[in-house]
Amino acid sequence: MVEAAAIDPVQYFCGVEVRILAIDHGEKRIGIALSDSTGTIANPLKVIQHVSRLVDAAQVAELAIQNEAGLIIIGQSFDEEGSPNLAGRRAARFADELKNQTGIPIEMWDESFSTQIARHARIELGVTRKKRAGHQDAFAAVVILQSYLEEKRGLDTTAVVE
Image (cartoon, rainbow, N blue to C red):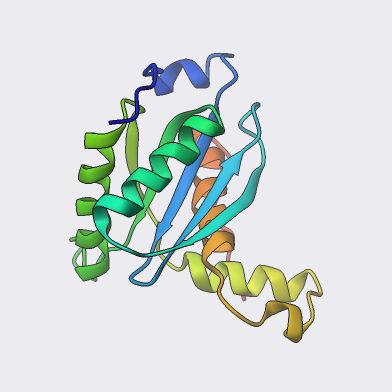
């Protein structure tokens, strides 16, 4: 188990500067994003290839420690009735394993449409099709983290993406 001092997530928004690590947990890859220390901006950090729940959790725990994360957000998807779907249940099992490997607080966060929003944002920014080729995992983690940061700051995150 990777040891870390647990930081109360509420303290983060009361002026304590800690980083937040966000996870877009996929079947083949795990996208990771990191906030700045002020909790204003989410940036892509890394994509890791899925090996096993145990190995993946160890890699994420180590990244969280290396980047001095005080909170980990894990995206979870839901079905039409509001219950975690298959991918959402998979993310919850990953969160359980990550809790076994680190003392850093973990929160699940609705990741609905994060990959589509990430893809659309990159198109809007003028990123060429060639540069957009490949996987959106780290950018989806950015979308998850940015929505979390904005929600906690009380900003409107319901903007419609056309």
